[in-house]
Every structure is written in C-alpha cells, then in structure tokens.
Image (tube, rainbow, N blue to C red; front, side, top):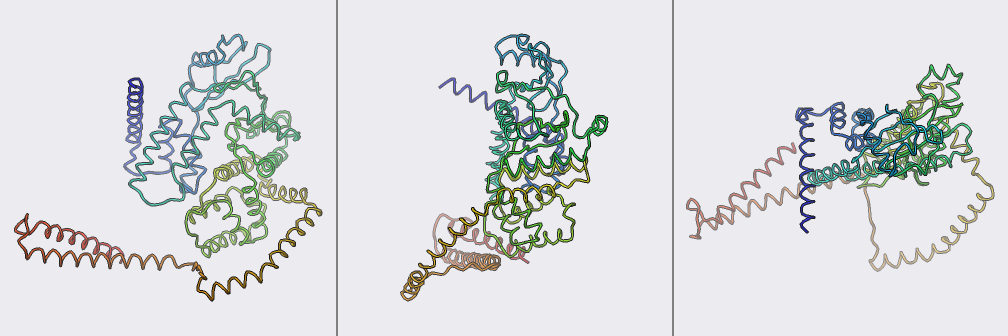
Length: 533
C-alpha cells in the first residue's frame, strides 16, 4: 500500500514538472496574444514528440481544424537532435543481451535520420549484409503516455466549461493519435506492415519495400535491408541514371491507387523521403504508419469518383453520407444544395486537372458543416492522396492522379463484372420483390384497421422547421422567466407585510431573497431580449 502511495506521489510530481514545462512553452510563444497557424506549429514542436504526433494527426482532420491550420501542421518537423552514439549502442546491447559486435561488424556513428521516436543508422551484419538499424529513443513511451494523461485531464476540464457539442470529440483525436504513436513505437508491428505490404505487392514488378530481418528485430529495434537508391524528388540523380520521370510518376500513381482501392492498406505518409527508386523500381520506406479502408469506405470512395465524373449530385450526397455517422439532425435540402454547388464548380473543369486531394478536403469540410463524424481511415486517405498528388505534380506534372484513379475504378469494375453473377443477382431481387408484393394487400388491410381504430401514428420531419421551433422554445422560456419574476415579486411583497423573522434592513429574509432572485432573473431576461435584437 505504501509503495503504491509513493509511486503515485512520484507520478504526480513528474506530471507537475511536465505541466510547468508546457506552461513555460506557452508563455515563451506568447499564446495569450492570440493564435496563428504558424505559432501553433512552433508550439507543438517545442512541446515535444507527443504534441508533434498530435499535430500530424490533427493536420489530417479538416473536420476539426480550419484548413489553414491543417496546412501549417502538415509542415511539422519530425527531425530531432540525434542521440549520442553511446546511447544507441547501449539500447542495441540491452535488446540483444550481448555485445553489439556479436551481431554487427560495423555501425555508422553518424545517424541517417533522427526523428522524435526513433533514430536510424547504417550498419553491416557479421554475415556481411548491409542493413539499417532503427533504434527507439529510450523512455519515449513513458514520456508520451504521461503527456496523453495530461491531455485527457485537460479535455475533461474543457468539457466541464464548454457544453457545446462538436462533431469531433477531442478524446477521439487523442485515441487516434495514441493508436498511431503506439503503431510507430512497436517495431514488430512495423515489421508486420512491411511483410503484409510485400505480400500484397509481390506480383508488381515495379514496386518493392525493404526486406526485414525478423530474427534481429525487437519491439524497440528494427533491422532492415539498406536501400541504395535515389529519392523520387532527386531529379538530377534520376536524369543521370536515365529514368523517365513520367513513367515513374505513372507507376507511383497506379500503385498508390491499388493500395487504396484493391488492398485497402496504404502508406499514410507518402512524402518524397519515403519514396525511393532502385533498379527502376519504386521502393516504399517507413511503413510504420499505414492506413486501412474497409469495404464500405472503398465503395463510398468509388461512388464519389463516379458521381463526380457523371456530375450526379444525388450519388455524391449518398457517398458523403455513407462515409460517416450523423451526430445530429441533417438538413438534407441544404446538404444537397451545398454538394450541388461543389459539383457545379467542377462541371466545366477538365477531369485531368482535377485534384483528388482538394476534392477530399471539400468533402471533409461539408461533413464538418453537417456534423458527420469522420472515420480514421478516410482522414488518413485524404492526407495520403493530398501528399502523393503533390509528389506527382513535382515529379511528373503531365500525369493526372485522378485519371489514374478513375481508370483503375473502371478496370476494377470490368475485371469483377460477371454476367452470371448479375443474372443471379437479378433473380434474387425479383424473387424478393415478388414475395413482398404478395404481402402488400395484407399490410394495407392492417394499416386500414389501425387507422379505423385510431392506432395509426404518423411521424413528420419537416425540413427547415428546426429554427422556428428553436425560436418558439426560447420565447416560451422568456415567458416562464417573466412569470417567475412576477410570482416572486408578489410573494415577496406579501411576506413583507408580515412580521416574519429574521430580517435584513427591516425586510423579512425570505422576502429579501425573493426580491434578489427576481432582480437577477429580470436582468437576465432584459439581457437576452437586448442580445436578441
């Protein structure tokens, strides 16, 4: 019992120290003078890895933050000060429980990259194979878990002071961020991702990923094949090797569409540093953060692209609604109008110049307006598409990602189309329709019986009726307050005619309290009336 008490005291003291550090950062960045997108980005970078990761997740949620903030947070720097080489060797030896020279003949002291969660070094195995070693920063899990606890406490306080419902619960963002962070901190999970990705793309001659040395990898240490290639945005290097950028860009777009539409398992952070070219093949790196799309989400995305191509507002509305869960009443007429306005903007646009990422943003903004919650998979899809489109615009501006997307969907439809399946489907639907038709007279008879006996109930949902009802509700509330004020005044005046004790300034205490409450309610009523004007 005493040990637990001491442990809790230590944890509380640690949380207090961390809270002071956060407050110091907010003071240094002068947060009381207002917030801008750039200032928010700098604050999150100063607060450390937890908040950098939080910012990266929030940059994928335009349904939570204004677009300019999302754009700023996408620039968050993940580079961190490299750990001393002695610390790296200590982690390696702790993980293997033996001297590092028994596994590696050489480890480069200079880091290839140093991020907030891990650090990467080149190395050579004792068997002579060139590899990279990804080493997790010691204690990073504990630091991030403490920050999560503090953020949850802050969220609970915000809920107490702010009762306004929102489309996105901040706890949901924290859950999403923590799930992604735990994915990236569990290197065995990243190894699973790499092997799953390799298996899904084993038949693609133009795509690969690093080989994982599973026996040498642990939860905090990942050993992978060293990739000797060229970054996708190193145009001079690509030209020197004789690569055609348009061919590379098309292969990149086709593979990313395959990841989304066919596999439902896609790279969630496809920036140029994670896309390399080796021997004419595109090599995907850093597969720690991967997105998943279920069949329902992929079907909705297909529906949205076909609706855009056909300028079908009704189908686009159905796609938008199927991509989330309504958090309240939806004004369907207004939703249809907003989607129709968005579709009109694309009606005269050349399909090849359409940006899929921008379209995803607009859909997410509409979802935010109409309080449609956004699943994690779709938010990661939106950011991934936006990023890969940016890469393709730099690498091969003459290749359209959305055309590749649409072509892939049509090919997928043709590949999966079967006359036999369609005929069987038509038979089933005809049988169901016939069976329901035979039940129709019985159902009509039941409705008539219920109507004649007064048991029929009709529910009407009149679009646009919410605002008048809300105003009527406010009006009734004001009338009730006015009646209460009058009752309190009359009751208090009656009490004042008696000799009831105790008294304040020769006025019975009960009567005085009645006058005071009536005065406060009157001030509030007058304030509400003036504000309403």
